[in-house]
Image (cartoon, rainbow, N blue to C red):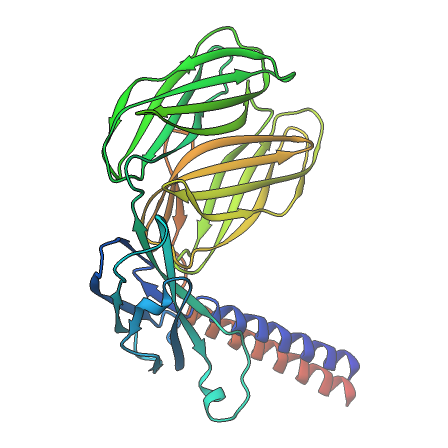
Amino acid sequence: MRLNNKIGLCMFFLVFVILFSQNVDALGVAPARKLIDFESNLEERVDLKIVNSGGEDMKVFIYAEGEMAEYVELSNYELDFSADEESKTISYELNLPSDLDTPGKHMANIVIREVPNSQGSGGSSLGASVAVVHQVIISKPYPGKYATVELRILDSQSTDRVDFVASVHSLGTQKIVNAKAIIDIFGPTNEKITTLETNLDSIDPGARRGLSAVWMENINQGKYFAKVTLTYDGEVAFDERIFEVGKLSIEVVDITVKDFKLGGIAKFNIVVENSWADPIEDVYVELVISEDGEEIGRFKSASEDIMALSKGELTAFWDSAGVEEGEYDAKIILYYGNEQIEKDIKAVISLNSIKFDLFGGGAVVADVGGVNKSNLIIIALIVLIIINVGWFVYFKKRKK
């Protein structure tokens, strides 16, 4: 009977894990983000679609938090869903003040949090409190001319050519007439190797421009440091980064994401290949996703040892709450030993997929196929019940 009790206990915990995992993506909101250019005393109404993606009976509370929360007025503060209700729509009124103290981005978060129905009647409940977030971002332009710059390396595997782009974002109220970047490149011992100049361009308020330059010569493999100085109509901005030149000995070869839903938890399976003749220990990757130079997501995989001349898989998780559909700048950083390798890529995020322009020869796509999750839960429970009944009958006969 002791063994039977242990098996029953294991079955209970397995059922608990399955039911808990069902709650993780039981809630959604669309759109996930609202971008607004600041106007004095602006009044705007925004509709939100709250999605019961888990098909559950549930209650949700809705509230605003953050710097700009006082300017948000909600039409509803709580909603009740039945299992057959797929979504409900609410709205909020945004009433901006006559002015904001500082230019730049100002935010409010509208939080939609699930509360199990049993809590409202004094009962107890099992599970986590799930929440999704709708972001309200109000951008106030900088007075006059103001720009930021981000240095990006498009390709550094070749030893006779490295392509640079100085990504410039005009955040001021006035047009930038002449923008140009100077890129200084330094070697491992901090000696200056060369200086590059980009093309000259004009940039409208709120727009982005890429100023390009190419380093073409016989370049030794190794690590380098680049510093960019952007000059624009008498103003300056800076950025810097470390990069490597040469054929990578270990690299990312594939990324897959299954069952992705915007606003939920995305699981990334990242395949890396070790071209060395020896194993490499403690390999992990970091993914950074940004919009207009501002990070909206940074997450790491677990560390793994990759065997010699073989492939290994790393796993990372990202909470996409508050992210909206669109194209984003992304960066993948591979860490091993005391080394790190960076690669700039593009990410296209939609309601049920993520596509990366990873290698220039195609895209990595989130897999959204598979069995319906509710059906999978039911099948799993039936199988567990059959197994448990089987063990009960077996031990009953054994006892006789």
